[in-house]
Image 1 (cartoon, rainbow, N blue to C red):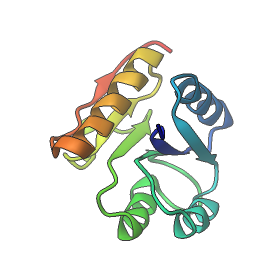
Image 2: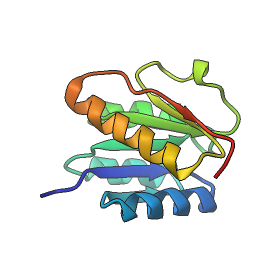
Image 3: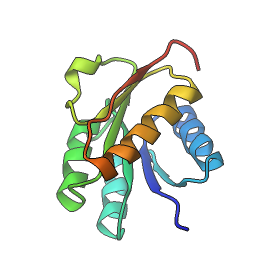
Amino acid sequence: MAYPRILVVDDEPQILNLVSRALGTKGYEVVSYDCPIQTLEFVQATPCLDLVMSDVTMPVMSGPALVSRILEVWPQTPVVFMSAHLNRAEVPTDAGFLAKPFGLGDLFTVVDRALTSRNSGTEVHSAHSAGT
């Protein structure tokens, strides 16, 4: 059985490593990048993605701009944004949102909802937490 492939993009190494390792422990196939340009190169060469998780504020290209380009290649891919400086109202309603800092329980909940929404066509909801 193939496990979902999750792309994680964040310019903060601690967040990138934490999210990637945590999702890996749940059996997901995780691909992570700290640079939007390298991410786009990967996306162009990849046969499929099941979920994109992206920081909102990054150098070179914002998370929403990056995701917009990814969705040109894989339009049905669910998205979860992560940010410490953005509120949920600024994220598209069909995207999930994790407010940094977040706990692993919140991470797993939002990822599960996003992957479920891909199959059911429902909206992804957010999780907000004050702890890691």
